[in-house]
Length: 162
Image (cartoon, rainbow, N blue to C red; front, side, top):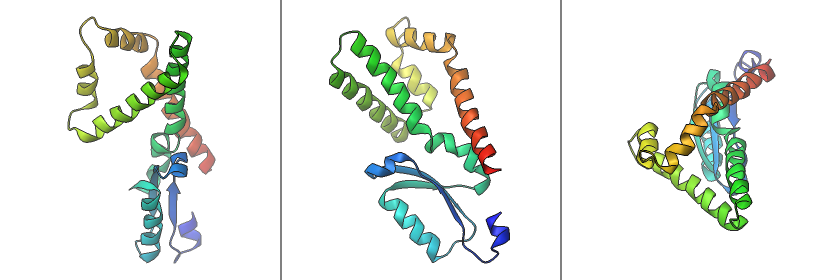
């Protein structure tokens, strides 16, 4: 809409996330023309993290992946930490274990060519603890809940665009 209103303007649309506050931003960026102004915007976001250039039409579809993802991961971590504390684990130790595991797991995904399904399977032993937990997630609608979460976030973004 802005491109139609301002025919010669450079328009850059960015969706950052709150980890920008600690220099770990993951942003999506789209722009209507590449010029030195866009290069300056890219340099700003390189200074506070990283970005992916996407088609502007995919902003709503990528919002759950970066813009909202921190909240979803915070909730996931919070529940695991709280449950560990309820079972006698010191809060700071539970927090450190959970968050370091999340960070190292993300690093593992980024550093291997293995599929995420392969990585999941590599953690599981037949009849072991991990598969017991995963079975509970699957049986209690975890996958469907995540899909609905993604869809609700994306659809709300589309509604707000109107």
